[in-house]
Length: 146
Image 1 (cartoon, one colour):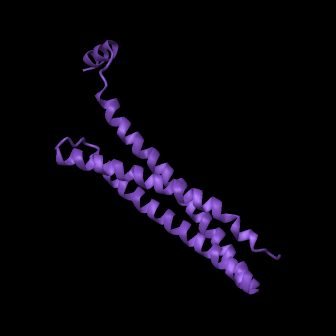
Image 2 (cartoon, helix red, strand yellow; image 1 turned 45 degrees about the horizontal axis):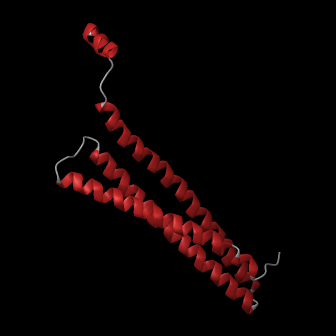
């Protein structure tokens, strides 16, 4: 199969948009990290703070890897265009295929990070749910059950 110089160029807008989304994820995680740091410094730590921090560290590593694979994918797409320009089609095919694989890995890591992000929100909400007042029926049931 022959590829033209336009084929790798098709990845540029997709990679650029995904990298923008990854940067936004990083900024959001940074904001949460600062907030958790302030809570820790102010001694307002909840019992789940360590779990939140552990989850946040893992999410930061995932975002870094997502960005790494996205940038490498972009560079290999550029390299593929260069090889096409030079007429080295076997190298162009290899670099383009590798670019697509790296882009797919980046997207898979993005799914994992979204999964972790959901877990982070669940941890945060569990802290709130534990603090909610019980209904009178629940209070009576707990008193009778003792």
